[in-house]
Image (cartoon, rainbow, N blue to C red; front, side):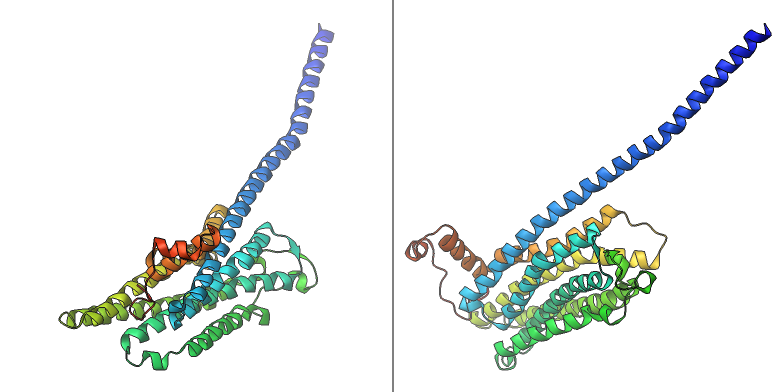
Length: 359
């Protein structure tokens, strides 16, 4: 009886031991399966991110190359305002050619030297700065056009406009490369030649991004532009009311200015709508280090900032009649391979006079 009890006890203990051993062995397997599942889901997110970014880059480059081509082919659009619009288009082309590929590199966390990663991050900021400074130059140009219409052509020449474009890009490079002068995070172990996993947040200081890049070079220009466009609309509305009984040409001039101002305000609104979420997330990370910003939210913010570069050509095409007509002409001639006589037979864009250069 006692021997049977001992055998039963030993058998039960042995079964328990085997079950416990099996559980211990299964735990690492379960952990590996879970890690594998998480890795696969992250890889799918990264692959989707790269696919969407590639599409945005293609659309942005093609659309903004068309903007430059339209301005080049239509002499009526070669005024100072469109010099700045070409500058903005060049910045948007740079987004498709440089910014998006570099953003993909940063998102994948490829191994690079510290200062290589820092320089890549600075290039992203530089091109963003050129966009907002081009928008500011456009706002100042339109303000002068409605504020001093009689002296505008004397003060704002095409040569001076291109000098202003050069200054916008110079300032963009100087402000964007500030972190290279020392305003950056320290390299790991203070050894700059050690390869790191290249990520924006591992090289760029958030106080630079929030105080200098966002507050000084995004918020302040946006406030100035809002004030300028508010004054532009006030002046145009006042002039239209005052000239209700004036000549038809005067009314056409200010109505044309009003329509163009509305189109450019739409461009400014889209820029703010697309870029502010990413900057707001930077502020959250800076002011609340314990707050967790989901990776998907960061991706959406990046998408929105890049999509902005593809939206501007659509605004020009649908809101500016002369731009629209020239774009249709280019598509019919170079894409559909129609002859010039066939295109003119369908529709004629009309004379390129001061009254009709931007409708």
